[in-house]
Image (tube, rainbow, N blue to C red; front, side):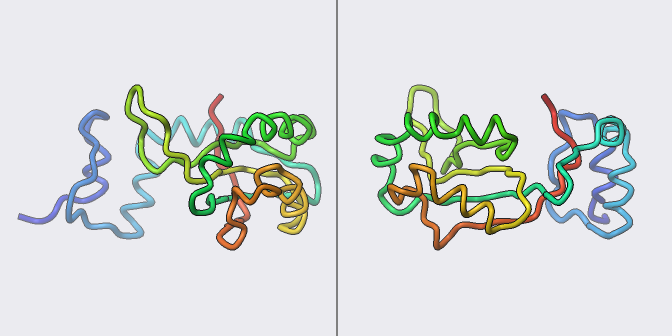
Length: 160
């Protein structure tokens, strides 16, 4: 019996759409997957509500891992971190941000925060680093700047 294809898996009802071990992936099957009915709403939404940024700027995905053993320091300065975000949220520099967790938190247990993830709007990586170095997490060495990752990011859609 041949291995199931990704296209066939995507045609299953939503609750049954799970990755199939050994599924055969190919360029043509991945293209067909984006033509499947479940992607039509996303495609319509993306073209009806395009994501725009100011002229000369681009969106950037920023991953900021925490340094080893910095959880206590993160929690100590966290209120000031949130206070400091307001200016750059209001001026449109930050589009999205939050904590990166080591695993899905269990009810009643503390979150295992291991870093931060952001989407920023800037003209360059240098502009991003200029803003980030003034954050209290940077000033208190919560973030490990030797491991920061910054990627140009083209958002296809955003849900409210």
